[in-house]
Length: 216
Length: 216
DNA sequence: CTATGTGAAGTGATTCACAGCA
DNA sequence: TGCTGTGAATCACTTCACATAG
Image (cartoon, rainbow over all chains, first blue to last red):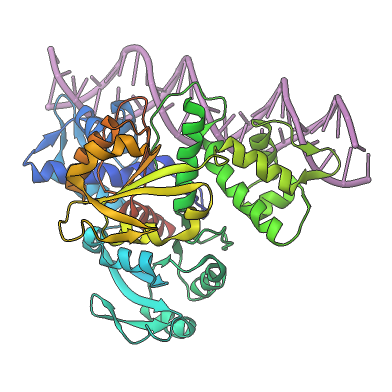
């Protein structure tokens, strides 16, 4: 399940925003294959979408293609990365160093593209002070309110147990963080101006279960 | 990012299906708080949604409420669970026992509600034969085609590296699995009749990054 | 002749607003 | 009176189809 709240007189539709990172990944694959130019049909095939939609999505960002030719891969990747705000490093904090939190930290996939971990918090005293990866030491959750503001992350990831998540979210918001990615299976309440995305693994499985039940 | 493909002369809209597990979670919370009856407004508050939408969503499944009163919590939870196919145990296989795969296995959250792990595969020979949790031993990925059909999972979860995911998906589909939850950051191609959901952590962060860039 | 960019049409989901019922 | 269930209205996204440019 994904959910977004936040400021909205959206120029670009939310559904388009959700596809842009996928297009970007396809363009990086094309770069790796030394493909210099790609058409909307090509992007659609790689991303599992539809060519008209690719064109409309890209048109929200500007006019990057050449009629009769297609899109120059490097240039288009640059434009999408810029639209996504990936040209500046994004500072990200993690709260909750359980198995899932550890997995995210060690996952190089987004360590790469403009995302930098700047802090890791956990409430377990045994973990506090130990290395968390990336040269970071685990901080105690009690320190969160005191230390997060100066670290200045734009994004915080919550991987705490469900019962701690709202309290953590409140502290994160109070520290000025404007975007939250929550993996805890609870509905968080955040102010209007905070963007919240919810990823719930149990919800995903239940959706698949529905389709199995329906499928026969 | 989430994506669904599959058979569709959908009675129930996909967006509704995505909210049902959330409503179910709220009802379980209400049960834990010994609340016997809840209104659409109450469910909306707990789930972060809107009351009219809650009513419309539930109306796709049947007429479970009492006018002037609301919904009986236990009964509604039962109806939603049934609609989601959670009254029967769902057999789930995991492919790729890295950090993320391990985290999912150990996450009790869905071990509970109608989901049972029936097999774990990994390509690392050092892991094969070792205990994976829940009394399961890790099997080699090479065995997948031979052993998965008789284990008969309805759902498979892919947590392999990106470059292995399509091959794994092909084997899974060939083994008769009809629902796939993919965490590998690639666009998978699956036949029409297979339901695919994609969870990409990097994509989620990039979406949040967009909103930061836009927000000021 | 090819492929983009985009109004217009079509489709689907959300919200409204109220009839129906306890 | 209070709250559900639901047509009707609204809003948003997708798809079509073609003018436009190379």
